[in-house]
Image (cartoon, rainbow over all chains, first blue to last red; front, side, top):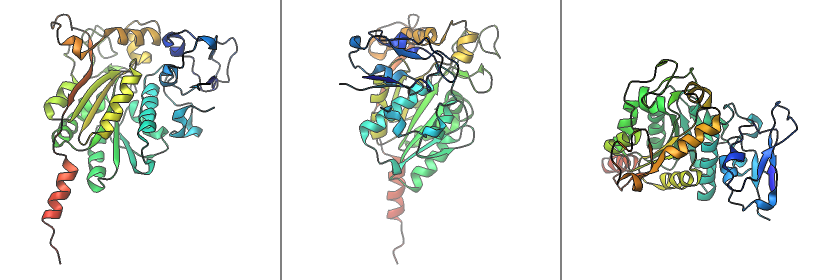
Length: 66
Length: 272
């Protein structure tokens, strides 16, 4: 499972660019800070390498292997 | 579910002050991951920092920390380590802190080989004060005090640490998080001075002034321009111009300062 804390996201989109399997996309809804946070597009592509967990500068993404 | 780093951070202070896409957040994650994997006793970890963007890191950790004067983070860290050698001291500095105003403290901490882990966030510019040229700004790169491009030779902090006598010297970028975690773990375990330089992206000043479209383009530029030390050995100086050499430069065993000084004290103690 991939959890995204949308209130912590600052919309830098490093996760979208650096995910090797392109799991993330931009959300269509604003968060409280007024930016469009990342959201999970297709979790079935995820290989649980957890690079997004380390590369999210705002500690917003958590990955738990099922 | 919670992020693994939140266990070590002051949750009420989040989201942190750093600009969107700043590499310092990645360095916080990597440090937390290294602490997680090492199972450190958190009551025995002390963080110190000087002045600068990177020096705001210890304020977000739920650990004992010192936010000290500009460039003197290593001097304070030396005091902590000598007073209580049981503590694990981690020092967060920036390129201005280690390369410019704290250069002398840095050289002599390396020379003494005291058991401190230094994580130096090198973003090539003075981010907090408005984007001035720093000692590590590469040639021809623009800053607010060098609007036509920098003409000075940049300072290589890793070579300086190596020459001054540090036990462990490594350089990674924020695009190499797994390698960085491994290096921080090695640095904390190392008995002696460990210097880990992390090349980080500063989009707000370095990126905008140097005509990068966004922080991702800057991070990609850093990733594509970094060359591993094993590959760089066979390359000429001209090929390496403008490249970032990453990897572990030094890993050696030397006598350690805080241990030696306590041995000396024990030897000359007057027993009554």
